[in-house]
Image (cartoon, rainbow, N blue to C red; front, side, top):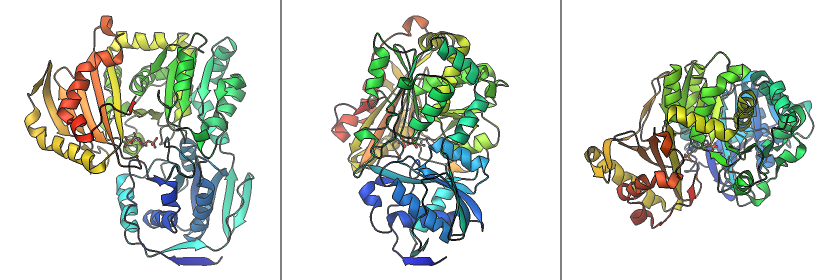
Length: 543
Ligand code: G16
């Protein structure tokens, strides 16, 4: 093999965010930009000679190009065996599964998740480690440190191999194995869920609509929901993955999946609706007449998981990210299992899952998953819901309302202010930080601050400390306002404001969310000085 050693200069902006490095496509297209980051990954990973590496992506624009380069660089950096999805496609959870199942050293996942794609859209590169999960902060810090020092990278001179056919080929002395992206993942789902029960429920009239948003889950949903579970083909919409997601925004929420929401609210609604995002790790769950918030979905799934065969032995514990509502905490307490509150980012669940402390994890950002892989998993959540619906023979609405009656309702909403001036957003956060110490005891209308802090997390498994993870303002009675800046945006800053109110009284469980949260919303603006500092009257997205 001829290995080229290419001279390069460090880029100053390759610090991985909440989930890898995300930038606009033209930014990634600068000469050497992607190669530098890939080389930093290989250096930080200290590739054992002949190691196995999984490579795949969500099929967005520029994927093919970077996958070719990644394979050529893997060959030049000591990898002995590359496992790549056919045509470079792998959903994030499927990649996580392959890493684990094939005992790979890790995986390179090319995706910008729910961010839009296309020539002017977003692109991203993420490294997952041997447990199948996103690299922990110790590793992302090492990657970042390397990006600041790189002067060269190594790449095989040969043109990238053809990855359009399933099978194994030799490429420059290493093995390149092209796999069916769906097969192993579908087999894993069959181990966890009662396919026969779900198939029977569907053949007896349970109707559904799954929106793949022209992203990666189309082929997975066709194989699992249509072929194996018998949902009519028409129940899977936008099923063909497109490089630009059909011009859409593959983010499964009420704004970007509005047609699906409208359908579920219409008189012809199916019983169950769901959507997933660009790379297949997020989910949105709906029933006829109801959108289930991700926080409620986590709580309901945790409370009912024992109904699926993969979880019939019960849960070891539950983990949620800090801004996620505390609905799951009540389930954990009822089950008598541990509850863990982590910073935003799936990577923080990895140690808890590996140590067997938790079985189910979830985040308000439409992510739920379990110990079956080390990523959140959109279709997994859909299948667990279907399993529960089939077992309980109730509607989504009935199940959620019963859950609220049983545990109380955590009213919840997240307000996003997108593309805010970065400096203004940082000043807003700094100002809040500066006032934290004096906040306790302050009264805002009927709300009295009982605690205010900048969230930090000590990993109970490896003792690592993560600080500055979001401002929490907790009021007596348990209501909360959380302020944090997104770590996944690519333009300016995205300010996220998370609002939560606990309502034990069942007579007050059917208020419009914004009515229930009105006082908190107003208080968030007063405490955060949002209007004044961002110039925004309203959030861009409420989820
Ligand atoms: C990523 C992370 C999630 C996180 C989400 C939102 O999701 O994997 O753990 O909750 O970003 O992060 P932020 O609030 O910083 O934008 P994904 O689906 O984009 O990979």
